[in-house]
Length: 229
Length: 338
Image (tube, rainbow over all chains, first blue to last red; front, side):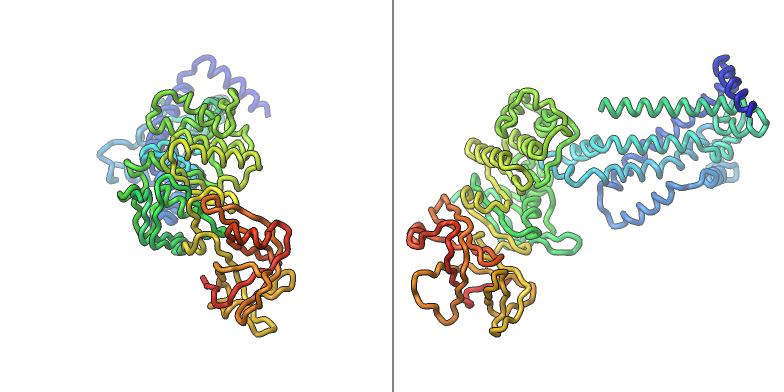
């Protein structure tokens, strides 16, 4: 077990000394997850709201599809995105394969069903009583939409956190679509996988600690926001 | 007579294909108090939601002040407000809950003063009360805050769905007084669904009785629900809990409800006629219809409550008082089925 302990010491050394390779992987992860979360929240929250708020003919089948897609395996998404972005694929001309935007596309596909599904659940769980209350106050459609969105904010935030958790910890998409290229598309998770394969636990543990720290920071921020609003 | 504030024509509502409301025509006069009574599931709440423009009917039109109205209509949404049976407060302070509707309408001046006035109306004038969070309120306080958040809007129409159903006597009294005060001061039209018949008889200009989604009377009728059985005497009817036989004509179905709107008290010594049925009951409650001076006597025969409308003279003649055992008479041919 000594190698694990050594790994922890090495981890602090790497982080405190500002090791460029470590910080490159951290930077790539933060950048790509910001892209993918930004896109999935922008698209997913309005779609999730519509799915939860409105009653339409195909609502149940759509809900079942969204719930199924919430469990999409990351390697399968990686495979599909790879097939689309490769030079022989339909989006090959955009040269997105082995780039951070390419990974972000895959991660958006991963996060989107989670954001849509959990947003829909959050809006649905806001009782019918909320709608009656807001409408009885004389709200117009826009005010009803905004008030319902605001009142379901905690549920929406929980959905965003769950999606962020999946995006931050996935390996399959980053590995297949990004190619794990050093200084370029190597993310925290692909670096951990590579360094562990090489027997370099120090770097792996360091990056694992960073992942934990980011998760901790995000949760502390969310708790603060919940208390504040 | 002035232009009705509400006119409803051929209204139908259904949920998941099940009809819940069917009203051919209904008019409500401005500044009147209308009571809605009827058993659970009779369509009272559905009617209030439609009148409150919360939901659209499956069929039919609603005219508000003679003009078609529907949910989100700009010219009426600020005039009507509904207080549902179970209060719902936003996850905010009392002040923010009461001022929420004002903010939706652009705030206006003196929001603090208006909120304090509305809270005073419902007996929650304590200075610190407005700052309490939503989770620190009792059921009665929640209902009163919910009412205050409607009263602050000074609506033209206030729809109340069982406003006193789940609150204590003191809260109920405050809610009743506040509702009447806003009507007195602002000429608000009040439409109230309640099981508190006594209160409705006292305050209402008109009472509508709903049963299975239809308006079929004025609330003064006695309704007796099935199932019905063939009695030993050969009549159709049911055996009451005190073993008396309640006879009815042959019902159209086992579950049909019998409506009796002509009942009389029968200890005047006159002979019982051929198709007349006499039951012995105990007077359990007396209510005054303030508008006409009539008395409504509720008489319990077994587990069935009969309502008899008495003129002041009849009341004096029969000397009706709670606890008195008295005969009720009705004729089989005066029973209607719904």
